Image 1 (cartoon, rainbow, N blue to C red):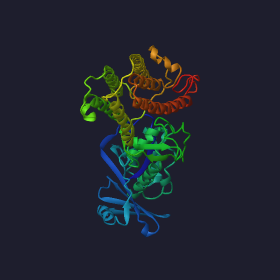
Image 2 (tube, rainbow, N blue to C red):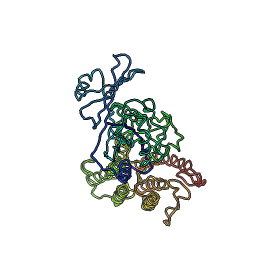
Image 3 (tube, rainbow, N blue to C red):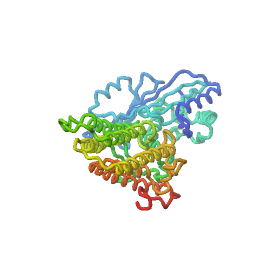
Image 4 (cartoon, helix red, strand yellow):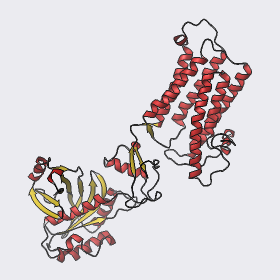
Length: 485
């Protein structure tokens, strides 16, 4: 065995680990190197239990070049004790697991091995628990065992295919050992130093997004699935958007993000489908089988307005279901699972409450003029609501979370965008006011009031978000009611 030097190769933006290894392989092969198999260097770290007093750290490494040996580096305060043992050392570590516990952070450098003249080159892909961290190049000059005599040759060879990334000075580890006889343990020490650097590296850059941080936390098993994660600048602050970058948030080295587990999640689409299917099924169930709720019905004829109300109710929720499947593009993939029960309770209970009264045998229908005014209002607002949803869909490309200022289209119903930020809510409230007028049903009025309150809260929040995000946002627009609110 000769003198070995390790060199980290900087990762280039938009180039993956395998692509970097392939790129370097082509360079090495172009120099005339021949691949002679694969290599592997791994490291597992153990720490002593608190009962032993001063904490000691034990690194156990293996090198495929010395398959029968196990290398151990014990760190205790300022002391470093190296050890070379046979393969039974791993069994010993298993036996003393009650004294030295594994940190469950296995590091590896593995990849292709090449030979070219007196040099041996290894291109290692470094991983921590199978998560890629970087590329580490090992070059061994076999005819020499004195670092001081071999460094210049190794430097020129490294710079020949790695370029200016290689320093003119020898690695720090070798500088104090230039005249010593090089040993296999020196290679292990160099690997341990580089592994330590990869461990300390944050793995993030100024253009790293919040979503990429979430994905990394999940890969490292430090946090649950990304949809359950909420990252914030302050412990009680608002959740940060996934698209935000550390640079935009003014987070530099040493900065902090606060993590919160949002709990079990469920997709928005699933919640919408369940909460909208319930009112459709429940209303029609009561409408078609009134005897289940009212007992024997002596009144034989049901007013035509009851049938029209059932049709309008069905159209509304069928539209909602179809929009969920084919129109809506959600900015968030999931919501907390508890919202499913809250939302369903609201919609389902109100559906049964309204259906019970409108389909009741003693129900008294309103006058024809009032009914027609309510019906026309309901139909126009339903068309307006659908038009707004289609316009909002076209603002956001499929599969993205892009936000733009909504503006009117060629559809006349979208002209309401000139006056309010959330015309879909305006039309929605109008639909239920129309349904209340056409049925003259007090529970339907309660439903319209409850919905109007909640949609007003949502609209005000979205209106503020639009003004905060877009400096050029129209100042004359209101949130939900033209010229008023």
